[in-house]
Amino acid sequence: MNNKPKILLIDDEESILKVIPAILKNEGFNVITAKSKKEAVQKLKNINFDIVLSDFRLPDGTGTEILEEFRKDNLITPFIVITAYGSINGAVEAMQKGANHYISKPIDSSQLVEMLNFFLQKASFTDKIQEFEGIIGKSPKMKELFKEISIVSKSNSSVLIEGESGTGKELVAKAIHKLSNRKDKPFIPINCSAIPFELFENELFGHEKGAYTGAITTTKGKIELAGEGTLFLDEIGEMPQLIQAKLLRVLQEKEFFRIGGSEVVKMKCRIISATNKNLEEMVEEGTFREDLFYRINVVHLKIPPLRERKEDIPLLVNQFLKKYSKENNKEITDIDKQVLDVFMEYNWPGNVRELENAIERAVVMCPIDKIKIEHIPKRIISKANSSQKEQILQTDTYNLSEIERKIILSALEEENWNQTKTAQKLGISRKQLRTKMKNLGLLPSWLSQMEHKKF
Image (cartoon, rainbow, N blue to C red; front, top):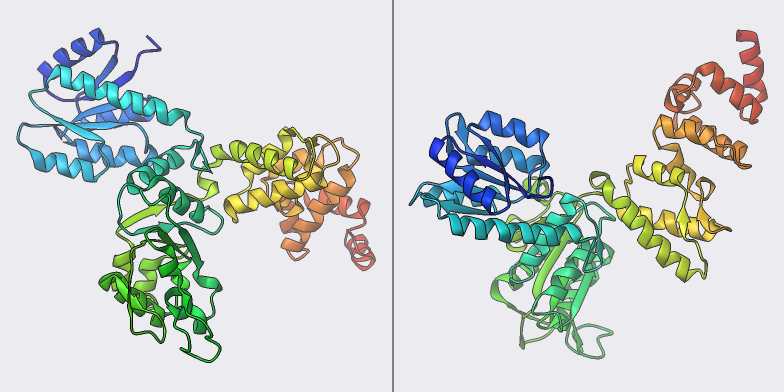
């Protein structure tokens, strides 16, 4: 029973609730039923289902309303909507809100079984994915991103990738390119934040010989070099507005001139853009062109920050450990549980890039075959939660005093040497903090005298 796929059937028709479970039971499914939106939502919160099968209309709501609530926490589990015959509008609405498919009443049992088996096989494949075109992740949000990349790569539409610094926007752009029919053509990246304003136009469009002083040869710009491949515009929010206007025209006309040229050059590449800024807010502020925003944002992908997919941290740590051990000719095969606990508590403002840098540093600093807490940057240790700090402070390694001193000093500096706030931050009493400061040589003589007079 436990190995049978678990289906939640949501419907208020007694005939459906009797017939469908009986059919599916014979096909090897375990069916649990719900007669209302309220009952369905409660069961979805308490039970993990392999597939959800919901009627569109219910006594206290709609299947779409259940879907919207369900998708807030679960982006992976297939959701199929049952619609009345000919009610295509309900099906369209459900698909727009994230349903995987729909089936019309009267329900064809063989079609339903075939559909359920299809989505179960697809989910089984997805569950095994831990690396996708060089991108590591098994969390629900990353699995959803992998599916989106697969779909988007088959089109020629412009894509806008949104994500904080260090999340891997270029990796996603490269994955889209590698899975597309342009994979054998060039992938040309441009970092818009690294190009001086006066060179931007030349970088994109190139120039003819003699176009300006120093232009001794004709040079192709990045759009032309991309050919029929992909042009990746990283940090497009940093692009100057004058260049935004010129790029918009190229996207509209699919052609341009090199600087100083009179010959039309056709644009054949696909544009993938990326940003760590909110371009919609920039549009409202007038710092990014609205018409260009709609041109580059035909398809929108959002990469979750590392703090929202912490279940991926062990996978990433393992990958980086192998990579940098090999690069540094070391045989570091393990990482202390205490280190991993700290990593799971830390919020990683620099995302995957920061984690990678932390592992690279640890590998360089580690003289043994196992990464320990003393090999981790102190800023990461100091920002772990209080329980983790207490664990570290009580560690019986020979480096205890130095680690303890670094943590307390870092906390004091963060709180401008306010002892009350520092003690609260570390989860210890103010008296304990003063004692530790004195023992570790962190109590200045003038402060020590003051404390002695005061207490």
